[in-house]
Image (cartoon, rainbow, N blue to C red; front, top):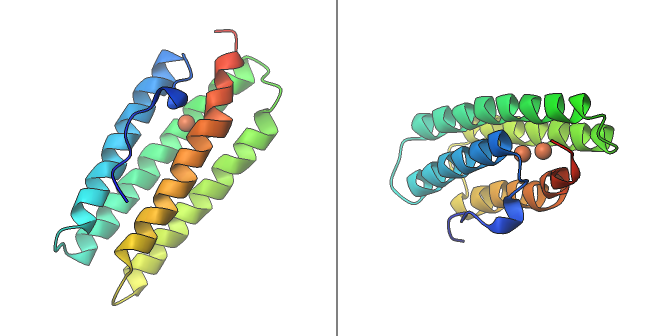
Length: 130
Ligand SMILES: [Fe+2]
Ligand SMILES: [Fe+2]
C-alpha cells in the first residue's frame, strides 16, 4: 500500500480544515515511512500518539464549525469521530503490547478509516455556508 496522496476528493473548501487535512496526511505518511524501515517500536508508538493528539484537535475544530453552522449531520459526523479516536487508541495500545506487529495490517487500518472518513463525512462539509 502506498502513501496517502492529497486528493481533491478530500477538499472541503473550508481553508482551516483543508490545511489540517494536509498536515494529517503528512503525519500519517511519516508514520508509514517509519513502518517500512527498521524502526523501534517505542518510536512508532510515540508517532501514533502524536497522530492521535493532532486528530483529536482536528476533530474539535470540525465539530466547532459544524455546530456554529447548525450542520444537519452533526451528530452522525461527531459519532464517527469518536469511533475513529477509539480505533486509533486501540491501534496504539495493541502496538505497544505486541512483540511483533503486522506493518501491512497497520497501514491498511489507518488508511481505511482515514481515507473513508475524508471522502465521505468530511467531503460533505463543503455544503456548509462559510
Ligand atoms: Fe477531517
Ligand atoms: Fe470529520
